[in-house]
Length: 266
Image (cartoon, rainbow, N blue to C red; front, top):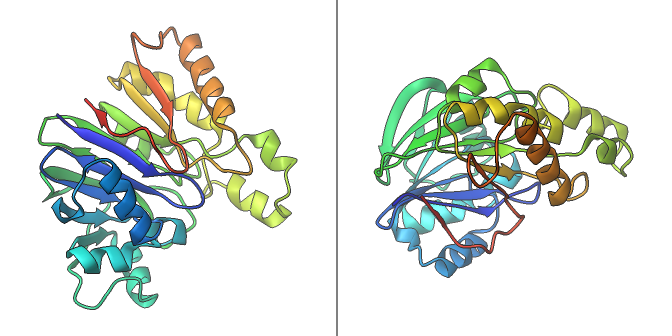
């Protein structure tokens, strides 16, 4: 059975495990290695069975534990060429780590941890951000698509038809506009290379559900500019208006900053 777990999700750190009972991979390592080790141990996952870390981009909430974790367990590191250059320039990977630049063309596939992984380009204000589509050994497909300023045709096509999609629902627009962030940061978040809002995320779900996706995980919620109940209600309303019934046509959950709900097996 395929196993999926968003260990950490949000502006303070992101890390997702995908695999099966024998092996797997991580998407990002955005909190300390110790916290990742603790989260994996709580789920009975041996980090020595994790073959590689696939990095979406070089922002600290996606790579904070990368250097220590990859060195300690010999995990290989994959990223786009631009992101890999940024990681090396910032000395975010340990000397001797096996690093590989993966084209974000939506077609090139690598095999790690019993999975086939393909990268696709995402619009975010980093060197060369990407998302990942993962085909597990159990013939399930999972997409991780966060840090997206807007839903491009490239992203939409890359994630279409996946069994499970981890998709960004970062902020509630009124909360952001009325919140404490300085204007420049609000504009950065709202920009086409910023983060996906609750309504923008919700607008995509009906089409994705009708293309075959049965599980959605709303991720990368802002602690200051969003609430889980708002993100969930916005998504549920869109899906209901699209004629889809929760529990029958789809399952929906919100990834918490530090997930304590174990592993989703499907």
